[in-house]
Figure 1 (cartoon, rainbow, N blue to C red):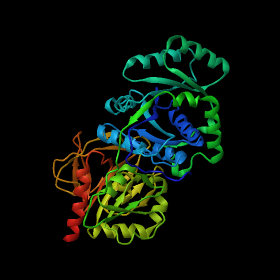
Figure 2: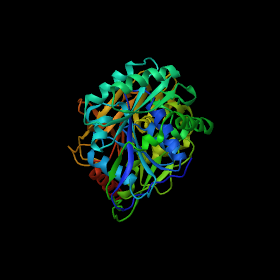
Figure 3: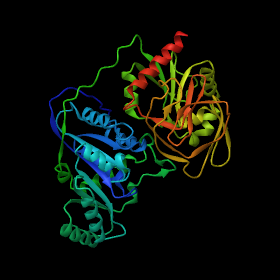
Figure 4: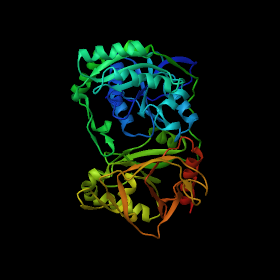
Amino acid sequence: MMPQKDTAQSFSDTRVPSFLIGGTTSGSGKTTITLGILAALSARGLAVQPFKCGPDFIDPSLHRMVTGRISSNLDLRMCGPEFCRNTFNRRLSGQGGGVVGVVEGVMGLFDGGISSSAALAKALTLPVVLVIDARSAAESVAAVLKGFEVYDPQVQIRGVIFNRVGSERHVELIRGAVEKSCQARILGFFPRDTRFEIPDRHLGLHMGEESPLDEIQLAGLVAAVEKHIDLDALLSLGTSRVTNQVDSPPVVRGRRLKLAVARDLPFCFYYEDNLAILEKAGFELLMFSPLYDQSLPAGMDVLYLGGGYPELHAEALSRNVAMRAAIAEWAKGGGVVHAECGGFMYLCEELIDLDGKTHAMAGVFPATVKMQSRLSRLGYRQPRLRMDCLWGKKGEKMYGHEFHYSMIERMDPDVETIYQLEDGRAEGFKVGNAVGSYIHLHFGQTGKNVDAFYNYIMQIQKG
């Protein structure tokens, strides 16, 4: 893996080659195509800066796997337009020549309204490369492409890549129909090849930290992209005007609070920009592993457990009795805790896996969660605070996303909740100063709530 590059400086406005890779549907192959393009451009020595449209955690980790660079989530609904524009500029700022911006879309190009890939492309004035799965059609794909071109003329579909093409004859049929009726430039025909497919599971593809593509597979993917996709034409599709961007300095505080962040294979779902926002707000991040470590980081002031896959590691997490006890002692002693989705599941008393086996967890919340074979909940959430709490004042709105296969089978009815959701549900379970929720928050448009979080901890420590 290449070393991480994540700097932002002041520099003159410039034009940067950039584009969004979208698909006609989910499953069109845009993630594989995106990874191949990221890797191939990086192999050419370019500074490739990836981004992900939408709230997904997995694709950004795969981007980082092949580029060595943090991939930011750009989500107009969850993060807000200002955050998306500023983040896009900041990530592309001050990197000198040879920088390229690549945004991977989400679902079908127009799916999701304000949160769609098309909306983001318009907001950032990005040309679009459309990936079309051609495995079960030939000339008909021209009609599909034409429909996408005319559906919203403000979306600049400049190029197209046909994926899972079977033969030269297949290519000829597609090319003839497209060149006769469509405007987008044909950038390539990518062959059917299962060697490049990334394994998946209930929450999506495997994470980048798990190296789902080994070096041989990645090299093969790069070679295939170089052979079948016209990268020079891709780079010439268009540029974005990157405005002068100065990375804002950290907030000056009386002292930095030590934020212990659970980060390992069971707890790997974090928005990287959230961590950066927390650091700028006065927190020092201390990474630790509930899976392997025996104790919490020394001198910590607050505990943060993100989401991930605790159900896949439930037996090992349960066996680490020392860590479970340390977390329970911290929470029951009044320590501040924020836990999201998988982190919340770990803080319950029990987790029941898909085989029906019960695993003892940390026991902060008097609850049992149970894995389901089908998706339990999915969607954007805008929780309002039901009370003054660690995230701010009663009535304030926050932003996030919910996506999980488990459900609460048992929860003590006396447990308080701090969130009121749009659908009427009460969420954000509170025991002492510990809060657990299925919602993954993003702080892109709620910086004041991060300040409230800092002040809450300081107030608790003052007694």
